[in-house]
Structures are given as structure tokens and as C-alpha cells.
Amino acid sequence: MAIEELLERAREARDGAYAPYSGFSVGAALETADGSVFTGCNVENASYGLTVCAERTAVATAVAAGHRSFRRIAISTFDDTATPPCGACRQVLAEFAPEVEVYSEAGEHRMMWRLDELLPARFSRIFAGDDEGIRASGPSHSERMDV
Ligand code: THU
Figure (cartoon, protein in one colour):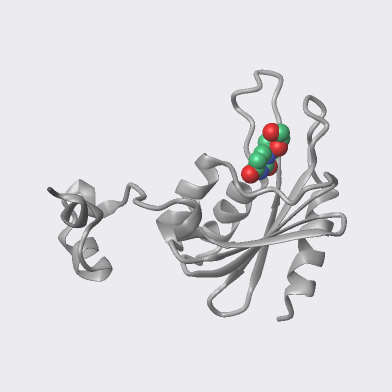
């Protein structure tokens, strides 16, 4: 899929945003390893803190449909500057896709990052004593940083 198409899906998802408190509508489109796309938007709440971001909505929708392997995520807002995912969304994305490519657009402005540059030394299963995770991920961050 062309990145333009994924960004268009994010724009469409942005139209569903429920953002009466911040006025900041966000749409996200998450591409799975098999090329499927799941979208999300931010859903705010009168209690503010219960707000869920577009990226996490997209991850939850994809996981609920049985997908756990992701290639790219596109994010779209009406702002002037392309925004990276917030810290909470980075951690949630890293659970399934530590190297996912993150594309963001706002008007004419576009940015692209890899998640592992946005969230180096993430907390992961390997720190919770998960041997399976250690084998899958190679040397842990703590081993590399041990002095
Ligand atoms: N928001 C997202 O949907 N994704 C992000 O990565 C950053 C922030 C939402 C949360 C809130 O509804 C609004 O943007 C303003 O913070």
C-alpha cells in the first residue's frame, strides 16, 4: 500500500474524533503485517484523564481483530506541525511493534520516525523475567547499559 493511501485512511479516521475539550482531532491508520488496515481516533472524556488517543484506539481495534504484528502507522491532525505519538502511545505500540514506522502529517508538513528512535530502552517483557521475550529480542537494554 502506498503511504499516501495509509495517510488518507488516517485523515478519514480523524473525522470520527471526539475532541470537544481540546479541539485537537487526531486520526490514525495502522497497517498490519498482512496489509490490513485498522483505524482509530481520539476519544475524549469529561474527566479528561480518561481520554484515549487515536493511536491506541487503532492498536486496540487491530488486536481485538486478531492482529499483533504491525508495519506502519499513519497519523493525521489539522495542526500545522506533524505530531509524533505521545509517550503512552509509544509504549503501547512498542508492545507489539518496536520497530514500526510512524508517519505523521499535518497540512503540508510530514514527518517519519521509527518507533525505536522515539522510544529507546522501552520497558518490555524481558524486564518482567520473560525468557521467551529474551530469546525473541536478543540482549536486553539492561545488559547493554550495565556498568
Ligand atoms: N492525542 C492523540 O490522539 N494522539 C497523540 O499521540 C497525542 C494526543 C489526542 C489526545 C487528546 O484528545 C488530544 O489529542 C489533545 O492532547
